[in-house]
Image (cartoon, rainbow, N blue to C red; front, side):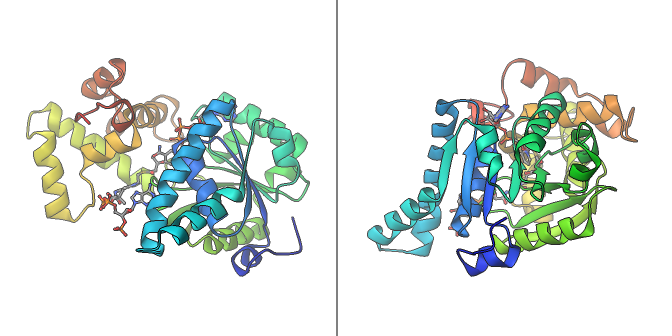
Length: 306
Ligand code: CAA
Ligand code: NAD
């Protein structure tokens, strides 16, 4: 952790260098927001191609932010985009990236084995006082941390961002039973320093938001299966009748139907107190769409066509 700070925002959290592991939808957003708040960021992925894709996501999103920040000043817009991208290094070398980080945020694919292996590697490479964090949607942080030493477990937490990261204000700060209070406090300061609002919660399935959101989205799918209404009418109803920015089917398509299926199947099968819960029982409709590769916006088709 650096003692000389690049900015007030970075100083608030005492964390300067951030390594983000996984440059997909979420990781690129997290890297972008941290860099926009003056952190030095290294974005790590498995290939140069994946890194370039992540950089493309960042450039596109930063373009939207810049347009609002500097309306009618194209030069200032491109300067801003270049400046923020200039603070993000791209790397396929996990160990080197973690070696100088005060905070590592893992946002690779939702797979317990892969995450455990990643964290074993991170624990071997990161400075002793680094905070290790996972952006998992559904896996227990303590399970991801299982291979780590007791000392590392004290500095491991969940930092759960929401999609689209640049736009969504919330970050859940997930506290395991082992995590030190100081680590939670430092993580809260980091979250505030990047312009987000923290909500601290225990390491329980779905934390706060997904534990409430997934039953709702699954109930919407079951309304469709019972032929109560079309996706369009259900979405319209929830947007205009309940004030949600997206309806449940638009949201499923946006998050990714594979991700939704992975979360509910995991809770239904593996439990964490939810095994066999009817709320998370498999849905024939969801299974069929995933099987066909209709995963939502990212594949051009889900409940809707794009
Ligand atoms: N980068 C930068 N800015 C973005 C952006 C991005 N990726 N996406 C949207 N924006 C900005 C737009 O520029 C626009 O800005 P202004 O209003 O200031 O001009 C603003 O967001 C609104 O965008 P749009 O007009 O294009 O569309 P919208 O009004 O429908 O808003 C939305 C888009 C913010 C995504 C909104 O629909 C929304 O909040 N949807 C719900 C999202 C949600 O619930 N996310 C949580 C998913 S669950 C999850 O993430 C957890 C998990 O573990 C699975
Ligand atoms: P994604 O598929 O868009 O991106 C995952 C990235 O991880 C890919 O670029 C992939 O190449 C990379 N990756 C795979 N193995 C890796 C490894 N060993 N080392 C480094 N990088 C590796 O997925 P996403 O939607 O960004 O989700 C990432 C994580 O965030 C998941 O744990 C997911 O549950 C969680 N999450 C997702 C959402 C969402 O709405 N999609 C919201 C909150 C949290």
